[in-house]
Image (tube, rainbow, N blue to C red):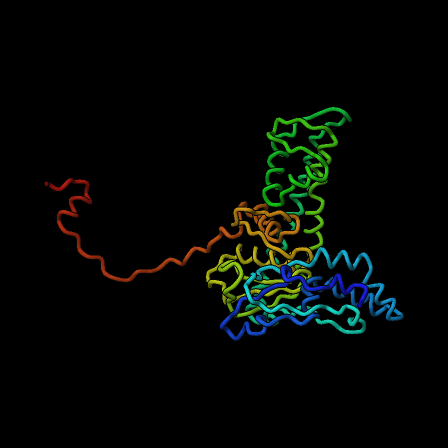
Length: 360
């Protein structure tokens, strides 16, 4: 038996299940994934590419085995073995067979196949325009985060051991950060840093620094996002599973690609909402740990893993750039021109129009 055969036994609880679909466009999605595709889903394209490089460089099978058994690989596999977004559990679904990782040496594993085809024509032009808008949201978010840290350090006491009020600006910004990224919990769990209950609460210089540093993971995520380097795919279908009307796009975590389902978009969709969808999917496509979703319209938003929640970043950027959630933007319908004759008014209606009250 392999030295990690025990660690690679399939888990029924973690295996993704696929809802049955009548549309032939989804026929391929409803079959159990081959072992290599299941591994791809676990690790993301970036993780599997790193694995391929390590096994390819190995001079012997034993070195390849050591690379697969390395703590880095084991850590990646254990933290990434999560059901992918927008897949629902259904009874009786087939599960993929166990993975033979030793047999992966020298085997070229495919990356995750997007759920569409490369965008062309008007769709590609639309996406390029929207990506430009999304880039301005990203830059606005980075500016906001930089300003936040400047404000925190400005209002912090300048002498060790002294205390200063948190102030209205920092208190307001902390509430916004907690609303989208849930930073209050990690500050207490990891640093035992209490949360301000009002703008008049006083804190030491160390506490101010904790507040300033709490956004570093958020800044890194925004900074590492490169919209131009991601490959967009388009589909004219409209999937029925997932989050219903919110299923406008899809991306496998860390795959560097995302798909937009143009069959789900209304013709008059607001540019702001389209931008939010692209930004949301871009975060999924960029980071392999962004493999789950808690949406802003759900009661438990931003969720337990808010720092890797794509919708937290897209919604936060929308609030910074526009002042509200991107889902709240609805393009106004065009004015309708009504053609026809105006009926003649009766004498009683004429008197009312002139301000006279008709006799009872």
